[in-house]
Image (cartoon, rainbow, N blue to C red; front, side):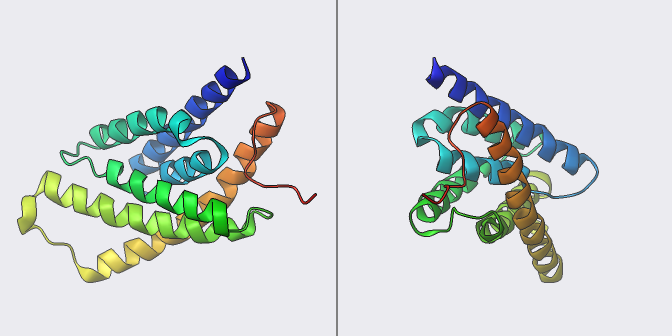
Length: 172
């Protein structure tokens, strides 16, 4: 029964992250809530529990944005690799160091997002400005880092309440 509740929590967090990212996108803000949530879920749970809900949400996000090229699936591969690396070598004792993987994933997500939108809307003839790409990547990195800290705090509070695995490991 505990596995069922864990899976329900994974689905709820994925849904909240996907809807949250779409809400931010509707007001023209790129805050990578979904990749941060996927990062959190890949670290706190077994990959096979997380893969289906996160993959479905990645495809739905690209379809909701009207993209023909579904690059969110490639972003998920990057998220999984960073999550495995961070779970082995990164700090999980405090929330503040989670800024760094969140910032990296936010920047990667922005670059893939711009590439996907360029291909979906204008074809290869519409190349974006390097200034816009750099400013957008830096902005997405900052928002991604802040979102990683905020999402970890909120999801850990929910996980503790439901007696599920948390991101932060307590010092024993």
